[in-house]
Image (cartoon, rainbow, N blue to C red; front, side):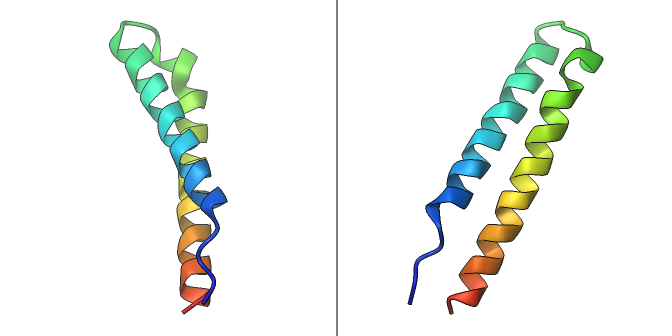
Length: 61
């Protein structure tokens, strides 16, 4: 049985960092619209990584 690709986990970690940095900047008082793209891309990337990780994990059962 093949292990799920660690690349999906790396993508989810990078996405989480993007979300956290965007949220941190907003909490520091910056404008939400300045960091909306960072948060949106982080959420989208995390979702893609999670879906692909789950699909690959289910495929290898």
